[in-house]
Image (cartoon, rainbow, N blue to C red):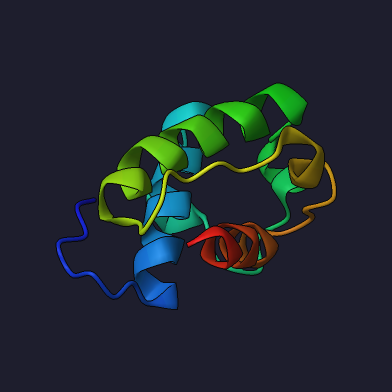
Length: 91
């Protein structure tokens, strides 16, 4: 997903996170909702890092500064919505 606007909404960030998880976990994006549990989706620590790398690559070009999601923070994230909040806080 490409976000051309300088202003990113929660919907934009959700779409990037959802699509990144879908790629990493080889799932249909339609199966991933905001309340989906990362554990139930099969996102182990490596999958979360891979997801973060994709999200950083997608959003850094439209961010005010380089986006960097700390690996340690990824371990505390339980749901897709929490991942979206973590990413949005970095923008």
